[in-house]
Length: 313
Ligand SMILES: C[S@@+](CC[C@H](N)C(=O)[O-])C[C@H]1O[C@@H](n2cnc3c(N)ncnc32)[C@H](O)[C@@H]1O
Ligand SMILES: COc1cc(-c2oc3cc(O)cc(O)c3c(=O)c2O)cc(OC)c1O
Image 1: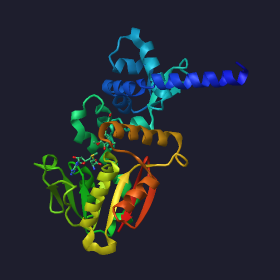
Image 2: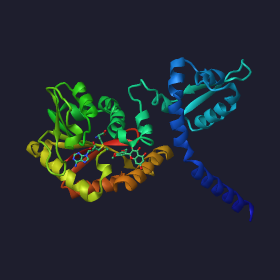
Image 3: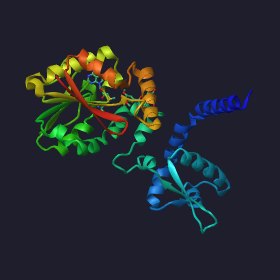
Image 4: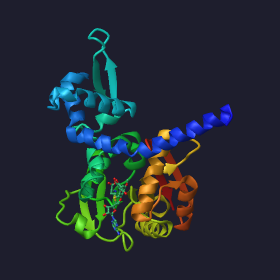
């Protein structure tokens, strides 16, 4: 084997082992949450030293080395930051990163229910609600998309977390949450928020706009076209001024960085195995819109790994 081939061989070998052992990443993340490490660091108010962390975890001092290696792994994966003190014998201290700030339990955008889904999938609506709290950031950045509306139906809107935030942000807007009857049974609304138990494949109440957040990626092309046609009926009284607002991923391997594409493609596999659904490229979205009889669409790519798409008849 010449030098170049040997380099490629070992790079290939490393990549393969990284993928094989990579399944430990979500497992370690879950253990970190179960141990309460993000909360401990947050409550500490400043970077926590290794010994302080071991003491807070009530782990015997003989196991300090295990905690140190565990934290090194998580820091390498950008879940925590490691600070090394210059004075205190190079003592290590750990801080939260943007990722672990989202695992602190009293934070409004806390995503730890999403992580718990791995061990307890029964809590599906809690998981979805945790994701929906990010909608406040979407709304802040695109008020013009919603402020012209008088009414909106959140189709597949679950227990109404998104709709409640929309109502709070836009005080004139009336919001209907449509989901399956057993999901919305016993939920109470307000004068501007109501719940309808129905099948989105059959009928959707009339409104100025329909919101579909994280719904279409659960379904194959044929079913998405059926849903979109029902949505088109729902906005028909507005002529060409009604619209569908979709919040979902748009795969773009050329423009996105490695991390964003990784997230979208992982979710694509989860959707494929679990629901026969998929994440889509812009071209695949366009084909859905044409198939359902829509004429125009506009994509806003500014919401992390998901985009907001306005679709017009
Ligand atoms: C992935 S969840 C998304 C929930 C919510 N939009 C969010 O972003 O948190 C999909 C939702 O679609 C609902 N759903 C599934 N089939 C449905 C149907 N035939 N009619 C109405 N809702 C349906 C589910 O109950 C669930 O709440
Ligand atoms: C992100 O949108 C959805 C996610 C899920 C979902 O699905 C799976 C599937 C799987 O095989 C393993 C998993 O850990 C998960 C999840 O954690 C998870 O959240 C389900 C959805 O609709 C039913 C979604 O729309």
